Image (cartoon, rainbow over all chains, first blue to last red; front, side, top):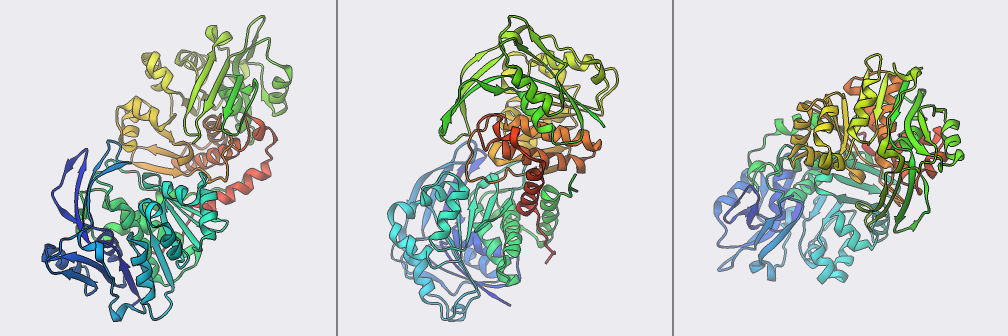
Length: 308
Length: 308
C-alpha cells in the first residue's frame, strides 16, 4: 500500500454561515485532507501540531480513520490553532473574525521515520518554510508532491513561497490567488505563468464553479456538483486536495489522464464536505455514497456527440 | 431539412471593453442566433424589424449565411434599435450606456408563411408580447420552443413574461435572472421552481462559468472553454442559444441526451463569439474550426474512471 504524507493544520474552527453558527469544532487543513484521503487504499499520516487543549476524541477520530497521528506534536501547556470566520450570504466569500496562531507560531514539523519515503506528499496550507521543512526530511524522492497555499503567504512570505513552489509537482490554488500569484487575469495565462515557477501541474479551484487542471496546453475541468443547499464551505478546498492526493497515492499513476480522475474524486468528496457544518459530513460519509456520487458526476459531464 | 424560426432584435451595437471600443456595428439577439445556427443543416428565418438606416450589406451578410430575411420588416423612415454598453474590467458585468428602441417600439412580428410550421422556434430576447405574438401565428405545434429572456422583462412585464414562459419547452436564462425569476438562490432550487412555471427544460447560463441544463432531477453541465483572452462577451448568450436551437433543429431529437449535445454545441459556438468584437468572429468562422473545438470540449470534460 502506498503512503501519503499530509502536512497542515489540525485546529479549532468556529464558523458562522447564514444557516447557523458553531462553537469551537474540529477543523484544520490536514484534518480535512486526512478525512478525505481516508476513502482510498493508502497509508496516511498527518504532520501537525496541537496544544494539550486538543480533545483526545478528535485525535481518536483521526486514528479510527486509519490515519497515523504519530507526527502530530502535542505541546504541553500550549493552545491549539484557532480560526473563526463568518460567511456572507452567497457563501462565496467570508470574513475572518479571529486567528490565534498559538502553537503554530513555533511549529517545527517532524516527519515520522516510516513516512520519509512516502510516495505522495500533500503539503496543506501552512507557512511555506514549514512546507519546505517537510520536503527536506524526505529520504527518497516522492512520486508526486502537491502543494496547497493561499494569498496570505503571497502577501507576507512570497520569497519563501516561491522557493517551495519550485520544488513541487502540483500546486492547488484558488482563482483569485492564481491571479495574484501570476499577475494575469485570464486563468489560462495565469496557469501558464505558474508553470514557469516550477509545478508541472496547476490546479485552479473555483469553488462552486469547479476546478481546472492544467499541464501545459492540456486542460481538464471538473464542475462542482450542483447542490440544493450548500451549508458550510469550510474545508471544501482541503477536502478536494485530500481526494486528489489520496486517489493519486492509491493509483500511483501520475499521468495527466489519471490526474483528471483525481480532480473528479476531489470534486466528488468536496461536494459532501459542504453539506454539513465542519467535518460532520466527512466523518459519517460511506464509501458507497462516494461511488454513487461518481455516477452523478458522470451523468453531469459525459456526453456522446457524433460529428455532424 | 427542418426549419428553425428565429425571433429577436437585429440591431446596431456600440461596445466598449478594456480592449477597445467600436462605432455602431451589427448586433442584435436574432443576428447572433442566426449566425450561430447557420452552422447546422437547417433552414432558418429571422423575424425582426429594422429602420431604413440599416445597411444593405448587413442584410446581405445574413442572406449569404442562408438565413431567410423575408420576416425582417424594414420601416421606411424608421431608425434601427441601438444599444451601447461598456464592460467592466473583468468582462463579467457591464453598464448600458444607451438604449434607443426606435422601430422596436411598435414592432408587430409577422411570421413568413413558409415558417408557420417550423419544427423549432427560438424566441430571442424581446418583449414577451412579441414572443407570444409569434407563437400565435404558428399553424402547427413546433417540436420545440426555446425562449431566451432577461431581467428587464421581469421588472417591467412580468405577467406577460409568465404567460409566454408557460408556452415554451425550454427557457434559457442567466444565473442572476434565474434567481430573480424564482426567488431562490440555489440554482438547483431555482430550476425546480422555473419548471413549475411551464418549461420542461431549464438552461441556466453562467457566462465564463458554463451552463447547466435541468430536466427535473436530471442535470447536465457544459463548461465554457477556458480562453487566453475574452475580447468581447457581447452576443455570447445569443450565440449559445443559436447553437443549441440550431443543433436541435438539425437533429430533430428532443431527448435529454440530445439536449446535452445541444448545450455543448452552444458552448462551443459561444467560445468563438467572444474572441473578437461583435459578430466579427462568427462571420469568419469555418465549420472545420467548430469540429476541432468540439475535440477540445471532449478533452476538457471527458474522463474514464473505474470504480475503486
